[in-house]
Each structure stands twice: as structure tokens, then as C-alpha cells.
Amino acid sequence: MRGRPPRSKIREHIAEILAVIGRGYGYQIYQYYSGVFPKVTQRVIYYHLKKGVQLQEFVVQEIRKEQGKFSWGSEVEKTYYALGPNAKPLMKDDIREKIKAVR
Image 1 (cartoon, one colour):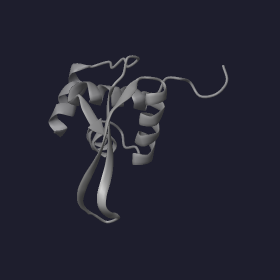
Image 2: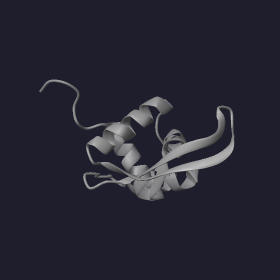
Image 3: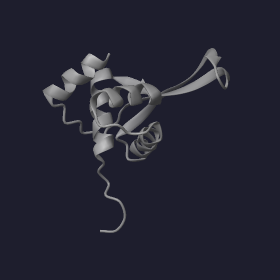
């Protein structure tokens, strides 16, 4: 088979995080990921969220604009993700406890 395999360990970990927290936006998911799994960049998290939406592992639940004081301006757009129909989180008890401890 040519190209990248359709499975990804990072997407599996993101699915496990979303199974515990319900829904979350990119940076929030990155924070959970960094607290539990090996370090990755924010960019790779956003890549896998986008790829997961294409594969229907994740769904975009809401896009919300929020006001605040940010280095780039006064508004931020947060895209909230949830598990999709093709998501298959492993949900090992030890990982679930680690994710809950990050909260």
C-alpha cells in the first residue's frame, strides 16, 4: 500500500482525550495531550484534528468567537471538536485516570 497509513497513534490519543472530556478546542486538547502523552507540537495536533474530521473520527461541534485580550487582537475563534461516528478510543483505565488528573 502506498502513502501514509490511515491509522495514527496521535489521533487515537486525541480520541481518548475527547472520550473523557466530551468536547474541546485545539489548544485545550493540546494541553491535555502534553500532560499525558509524549510531547508533540500544536501544529501536529491541529493537523490531526483536521484529518480526523475528514475521516469522520471527529466532528466540528461548534465554532465560537470569544472576546479577550490577546497578543493578536481582541477576538479569537475557537473550533470545538467531539468524537465522530468512526472514532474508536481504546479507553484504558490508566490513561483515563491520567487525563482526568490533568484537569
